[in-house]
Length: 160
Image (cartoon, rainbow, N blue to C red; front, side):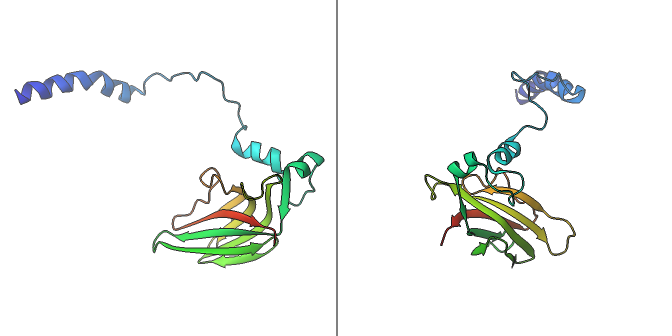
């Protein structure tokens, strides 16, 4: 009885295995995706690609500028969490990471609602940045640091 069930199951899965080996047919997307457009482009459209640029009138009406940001760092090996405040233009060390804050912005009508920080993060052992760009407090996974041991994300902007 168990052999018959096993054989029946194997025969039922045979077409799926063949499809997997063949690569299967690609399913067309219902909506075409344009190259180069995505969340990063949308964020840069809202906040600018260079945080040193001055705001347009539209950006100034929508976003406030903060002098510092509160960040949280996690050592995934030891599970130690550290919160720290960094001023715009400042560079500090979190474990082996070198973290620089270039800008921190927030929604003008509701400063507590979200925070957008332009960060440069590199491992002290690397010559290139591990992360450069806007990081969002409300959605840290959308634009995240890619490091095997450490995580860093934005908590809020501080205007004090």
